[in-house]
Length: 185
Image (cartoon, rainbow, N blue to C red):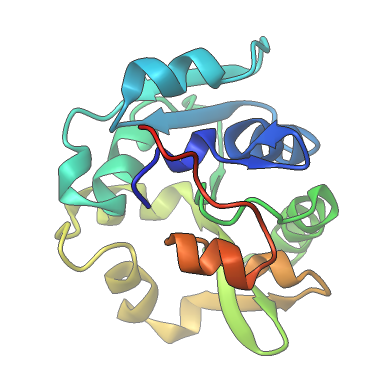
């Protein structure tokens, strides 16, 4: 992207502030993992008593390294974790709520949000899978855990295009009709 994704703005709010607000609609505790540009991103994380910030010094190893860092900060009484990526900033709070409610009804250890048949984010992982996620190879990501046993995966179709709107590049922002990153990092 050439700019810290959490600091990109959408309708005046940073991606990190938007994601935090949406997730706090359902999460008892929100663990935000920061890596690259940690000081700048930490300063942009909303101040809220239910938000915990964890720094991932291994962020260069990819998304799974951040997930592993975040799992270390989950409270012991938490039965599952909603995993969400900062480059999906338009997911609605109602989608997080619907996913959490469906997870409670289904009893499957993995629940993945889908939009028009395409899977995306967020994803819920049961605590029973935390050791498997922690042991997964970084180069394969959490997908290796998801694909290990299809019988433990469920999907929830939601009317929220943000589930599949992955904003990784300035071109992705442009295609989505969003402003590009500022020119300075």
